[in-house]
Amino acid sequence: MKTLSRILVLLVIVGTAMLESYEDGASICERCTCMIANKTSTVLSYDLLDCTRKNLQHMINNWPEMFNTIDPEREIVLSLSGNNIINLQQLPTTITTLVFSCCHCNLETLSSGLFKDTVNVLRVDLSFNKLSGDALSRDVFRGQYNAEYNSALLLLDELDLSSNVIMQLQEDAFVHIAMLRHLSLARNPLGQITDSTATALAQLINLEHLDLSYCSLTDIDATAFDGMQALRELHIQGNLFTAIPQAVYQLFSLHFLHLAENPIEVLNIAQPLKQLVQLNVSSMPVLHTVEVESFENVKQLKIYTGSNNPALEVFDLKILRHLSFLKELVLSRSNLKHLHTPLEDDSAEQPDESAYKNALEVLLLSENPWHCDCALQRVLKYVQFSQLPHYVEDDETRCETPYVLTSLHLSELIDIEVCDQLVYDPPNSPVYEKPAFLRPRSIFLTLLSVGIVVGLGIIIGLVIVCLKRRLKTQMMAVSSPVRYTSVRESKSMPIYQI
Image 1 (tube, rainbow, N blue to C red):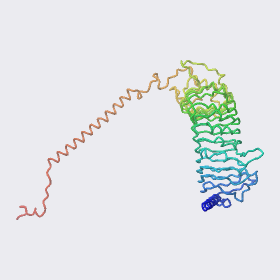
Image 2 (image 1 turned 90 degrees about the vertical axis):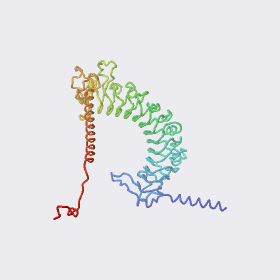
Image 3 (image 1 turned 120 degrees about the horizontal axis):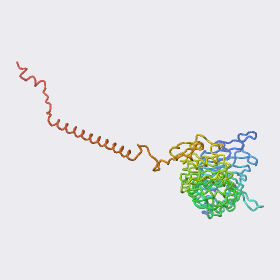
Image 4 (image 1 turned 45 degrees about the horizontal axis):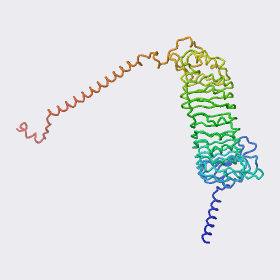
């Protein structure tokens, strides 16, 4: 009996401690910023409880009295970011629209039914914490039970779980938030979207925005995007894909694909993405080929961003014949030399002008080592490069080769007779004659002369040092020590004796 009573006492103490492990909502405005929206004001349209960096360790136990929590037309913004909370407890009851943030809180666990009493929670930010996949159980994101639908759905619209330590999701983690439209899992060590993680994502059939960037992804299971017929934006930049994942082609409503910073060597759009209007393939370190014909699968594309691709030397603007709606083409800061595919035999080809008809409004070609030949001039004329709106005259869109056209702006190339002139080869060609001071013989003779002068200087210096040491030794050998005589002794000398 004594043991049982001790256990009961312990449970009472623990329960009391748990009840007391909340921040006092009645006095929270003394520590945090509390602001109430004025319905007639256009500056602040929501009630604000900002407890950012206030050394809190727990959730508040209730809302401050000044907050109206029973009006669904009002909105409350609650921020606990920058506190050391570790375990996030259930939020206090409200039926107002709620925006909640607890990023940089060192969160490790989330209480069951975290948002059960906040039925109109809209956006939740739990980024930059220490949450793992085990912390994201199905009960965390459950709402109030609805007997009519036999479910506990939570009408959450946006969830940010970026920069945590999630390696794998439980397959039913999102079962109660199927209405979610925005999800970010960026900067989590996911590795692969397979098995339970793929199952969890497949349940988000209303998702419109998905961020899987910088997750070290190498594969996405084909079933992961099965039900995502509403997905419009997919961010998978900064991963380890060597080609566009097959699962992406199941996203029939996809409008924006962010594919930058992946080790893709050949960009090939293998299957149709009929709704795609924006594609970003920037900062790909090994991208050397863009398959022009594959862009027939993205005919609705309006914005193509492909800057900072150091291995890309050719981008054939014949791609425009497949992209009649393209408005913006960004090809800056790469290693581009040609806007056409050079022939192997270097023969002159007259390009078909109709292949370059376009609706371009922006064409950015700056900071590339352009080879300004006849073919490049024709392409620039066909796309009306110098007449494009939003064109900046002072940018670094200049020729690098041939030598006689170095630093010439591409807009000026159009007005020069390039095709009928003898085009000099670039400086690394045997035909190019370098200045006298850059020829190998001159460089060798210069280095030899410098070496001889330095060598003579060293020899002369050594000779002088040796002579000085020798003369010093000889002078010390012939010299005798100086003898000193006192005054008293000098008086005893004969010259003072009378």
